[in-house]
Length: 226
Image 1 (tube, helix red, strand yellow):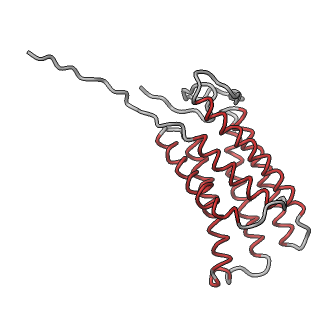
Image 2 (cartoon, rainbow, N blue to C red):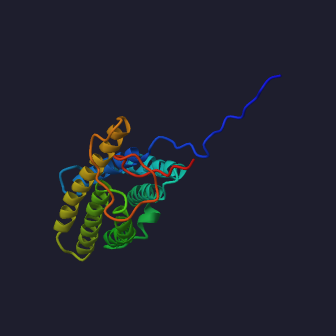
């Protein structure tokens, strides 16, 4: 008589950590646009990156974070993927569609971009607060991004009212620092995910115990359920 046994499978199989990919997409796109804002990279090259790399790829990383049951990563990557897609679409429409461009009079473009950044700065503010429960590296990304968004919003408001664009240039340099933090955190996620122990430090949570199990060194914690 044959004996059959049922093999037990865990209730949840995580996918590969999508955080390093999402952070890399965010970092590169931010660097290129910030280089333009800082006035040393020509305009236009960032638009394709905004749509495909910072936009689509980062949105996909957010969807994979949903699969990994990581609410923080899913919210962050999905939102900033949408940020880049929306910004790229706005610029394409404003420069190629006469009907769309006709909706914008005088300083409307600069005012619109300023309010766009203000809205995302509001979102970024509470994500910055909750990033302190992840690790120091992720907190650094959101802190420098907060500074960047505020400087750029002020800069666009100033330009809309006829003032000099020096705040935009300052926001561009702040964005380069943001990209550096994001690239480091992405690199840490890649190499630490390939190693039995952390190679690049990302720090510990600043407060509270996150109810997620994660191997030290990962950019964002993953929920593990057996």
